[in-house]
Image 1 (cartoon, rainbow, N blue to C red):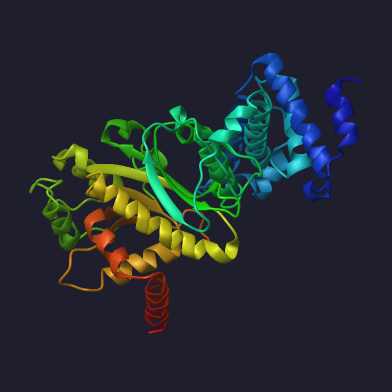
Image 2: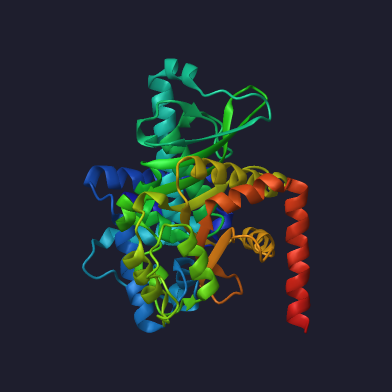
Length: 408
């Protein structure tokens, strides 16, 4: 009997929650050994891509990967039908993934975390002196910085997701996996994890009881020179299901920043988000003044995350202003962020802090995803003038306005 046959006998297909942590660890050990010995680092992406195409052929799903792979048709196909053109063991590994973790996507996420933890344990064992390089921070003090090349940073940081310090690049990837992917089910990020391992990132830190710096928030910052990597221009975020939400008032606010030329006009009525964003690119005149900010994570106890979200927005707005980024392309799914921005925009005599240009209910569950811009000078002033208490009051007030509007 082969090792995979032994594993499948040991791990019968049943609810993933019923398997113990040691069983899941043994399963990940096997997958890692197979990948390492055969040099097949793209095994998960190949399985997921094959199944995604197969499922979409059977059903016209328009949601994200989580919705596709938790559908009834996915349950009928995954782990059952052949993966034609791929090694036979891939189907066995898919069955193992489903048995241990419920689906191939969650197993992929767990495997990426597994690799980071293994790497952290290895470099701690081999370089104990490096532990003296753990970044420090006063108890409960918040500090933040923009790190230009996280892959070159040799400091170690604590996270809320593992009890040992790790390099900044590892910490950011692990945080992205635990928050965006495992908590919020944005499994699409698994195809682009390398963006979290390098480049320019915002980091917010808080000191723990031992005086060690713990990462509470991170964000990826990409300038215009990296626009080929922008999620804003990804086909998924420019397809026909996005609703355009622009008017002359919004375009006038964008023109007043000096980042776009006067050719940016509502006389051209875009019929799609792709048309509108093409016009934006054509009228852009100050390339250094724009960037895209994505993967804004908040980590920590649930009771503190609302405050951490407020604090990280306040700090990143100031940091982006200081760097000369006047307009920031964003994709936001967090309702409280949008509510606060709408509250800031209530004063008709002030420039808007945030401009929404498109939206979509990606998964058809009522959770709206917004595309738009931070106007950093205005949003920075907005956070300076509003304490956390004010922030919460404005969000509550905007929720009340929305309920009243719906009930009219």
